[in-house]
Image (cartoon, rainbow, N blue to C red; front, side):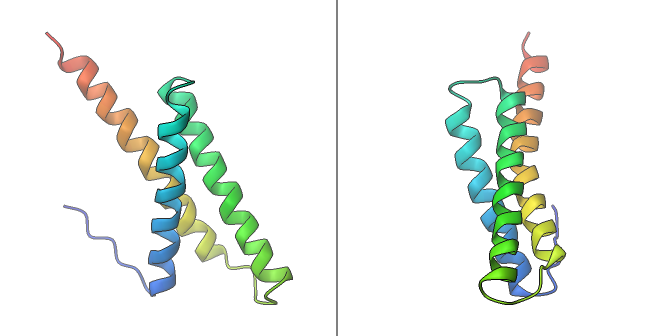
Length: 96
C-alpha cells in the first residue's frame, strides 16, 4: 500500500525507533488520558527523545546534528497516534 523509500539504513532505524517510542507511550497513556491527548504526548515525547539523541551525537560523539535523522524519528512518532485516532474515528462512525 505505502512504499516508503529510505535513502540509508540510518533513516529506517530512526523511523522505527520513533514508532516504537510512540506506540509504547501512546498505549500506556491511553489508560489515563483521551486518545487525542495521548497522541499529542506520544508525538511530543518522541520528538524530544529524537532531539536529545541528536544533541547527544553532536556533543558527546562529536558528529553533526542531523536534521534528517530527527525528521525520520518524528515521522515515525507521528504515524502511530494518527493510525490509532483514525481507526477510532472509523469505528465510532461505523456503529449502527
